[in-house]
Image (cartoon, rainbow, N blue to C red):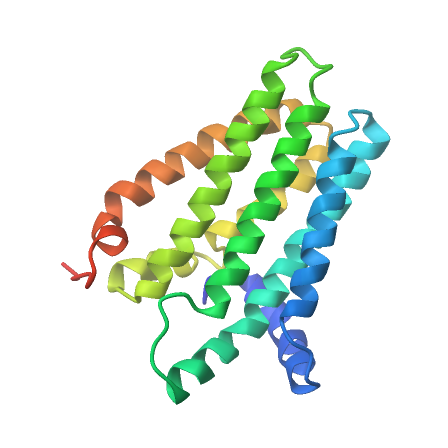
Length: 212
């Protein structure tokens, strides 16, 4: 989650309170996986009731994921201060879980839209959209972990971080725009992936990124 995200400010106090009570980030991460699977299964059913229910599960999945990453952030800092640096922090692990859950939900949405105008093509589009979104979120987390000045843009602009945009998915489903949503998510995520690969190529592929 971006440092400047408004969701970080909202969920931060709750995350810190849970951590102070000894609740590990694995607890909300487990809830996220369950909610993500429920979202994928519900969205795959195809009718409006299950699609709207799946959107609710997907929203719950996102919130659990944001909470887990918030709770894992201080834990990763503590490990870095008390021991050798790790190439894969616990926070990156939870970011990967979030990415895979989002991808699975989009695949389920595509499967559920086979009865619409696109037919079986919707399954391929859902799989492609889910894969692109998952890879994009993982790369964004990797760039942020590098800590370069370039990565500051990914922390959030106007209080909105890139992953916050996923919250538009359940809203669009509830508005009855699921069919158009699948195409929009794929195209926008593919464009975002291309931007990350080009603009942040030094952060992604260099062992020691250098700022311009």
